[in-house]
Image 1: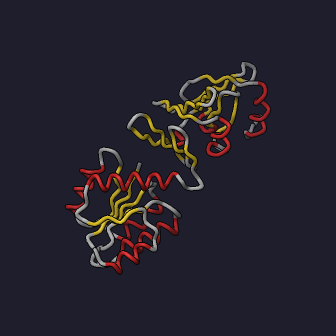
Image 2: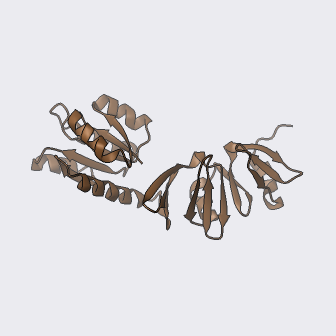
Image 3: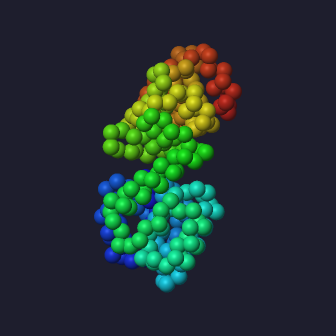
Length: 241
C-alpha cells in the first residue's frame, strides 16, 4: 500500500520511514502546497498527517481537502498536540486514528491495519476470503503478505470453480471469488470474456485469430476463444476492414 505522509519534522520523517518502509511505500510532503498537488496527482491508500506545520493546524485543513477529493479515504493524525480543542477540530474530519507523538511503532502499525480494514468496508469494495477488491486495484493476502495488484496490469483472469487466477506479466494471484462477480463489480469495461473460463484485458490483446478461435495476448499467452463469446467481441471492438 501507498501511505501519504504530511510531516515537516525530519527526525519524525526518518523514524516513520524506519518503522513503515519495510511494509509500505511512503510518499512524503512537508508543505501544504506540495501536499495539495500530490493528493490530486498521486495514488495513495492511507494518509498520516501531522496537524501543526509552521505552527498552524494545516493538517486539519489538508484532511478536509482529502475528504472533499476522496471521501472516506483513511486518515491518521499524528501530532504532539494534546490540546482538547485541537482534537475536537480534528475529530470533525472523521479520522481513523489520532496518535500522540512520540508514537509507539506497534501502536502505529495497529492504527494502519485498522485504517485498512475501514477502507475495505467502503461501498466500492467487497471482501473475499483472501482478497479485497476495489474499483482500481485488488489487495491479495497470502500468508502474512498483502500484495496490491493494479487491475490495469492484469493480462487475463482464469477461473476454476469459485477461484480466480489473476495473471500479470510476472506474477499470478489466486483469490476466492467467482469470475462473474469479479467481472461485474470490478473488471468491466476494461476486460471482456472470451471463454467461460477466461476474461482478458482488452488493452493487452495482440491478435485475435477468428478461424483458429485464439486470442493472443501481449505476453504471448494463447487464450481459447469460444464461439459463444466471439460475436460479443466483434461488437465491442472498433473493427476496420
